Amino acid sequence: MRQISVQRDIFPLASAFVISRGSRTQAEVLTVTLREGHFTGRGECVPYARYGETLASVAAQIDSISAALIAGMDRTALQQALPAGAARNAVDCALWDLDAKKAHVPAFTLAGLDRLSPATTAYTLSLGAPESMAQAARAAAHRPLLKLKLGGAGDAARLKAIREAAPDATLIVDANEAWTPELYAENTAACVAAAVALIEQPFPAGQDAALAHLPRPIAICADESVHDRQGLADLRGLYDAINIKLDKTGGLTEALLLAEAATQLGFKLFIGCMVGSSLAMAPAMLLTGKAHFTDLDGPLLLAHDRDDGLVYDGSVVFPPKPALWG
Image (tube, rainbow, N blue to C red; front, top):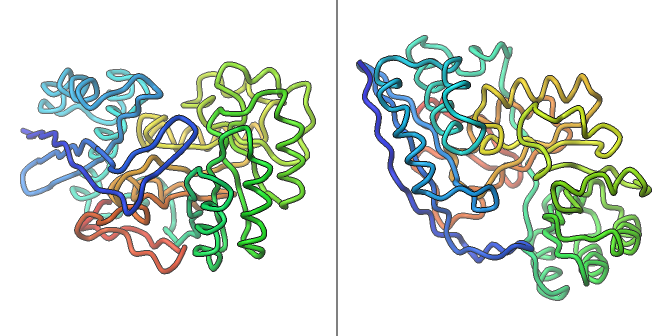
């Protein structure tokens, strides 16, 4: 018989993390631990207010299936028991970890992969005034890939300042739904001038249709507009790429299926994360082999990470050790 525990963990950030919807100084996560005999599996999720989640609501979702988990619920049954979201993510990843430990094989083997290789991750710069973002970009200019949080008005000045501060870095931008159709032409022109490689979620989710009538000189990536496979086909012709985050898909199981479906539909893959610890990043490493861009920098933004956390060499992140996950 299994045992299950759910724990709230808090990780202070190295500095305030600011996006168009607000700021935070710590990452609050839920850690699910499943124990079965001598084996232990763990998963982490980040409840996200943008999607109507709180620590309490996600914990309640997990509690609602605790009896079934204790009785032996597997990953397949879990997909029907909980909707896509943070709660299912933590449980699904804990089950992957537990299954890998019980089978004495790496999780990537269970997923049908031959190997798991290091990946180059983006490093995120918080939204701020052009001068402060340029200062942050200058400090991170040695990194090959920078992700810029933008905010709508004033983004052209931010982009110009950042590109001057980090002339050699590849830039991707994340508007976090803050642009309007009126700002689109000005901001995309600034992105072209700054040689930006990707624009993430310019408009609010639900307003995607506006992109059908606008030029896309730079690839546009859906984030808040895509969670799982449901509705994915409707985004064709509007977006060029999708951001896969396990807290949106509800775990690695759906994320792998979403990646396959998106590839078949012609979307490029962006593997992203919420701000969490290495335990949240580790399962997403299984998706990086097919990704056009990877953004698994959560631990780099923390004041301290979990024990046995992922190893980062600059912007290169290495696969997890079994002591962490998988």
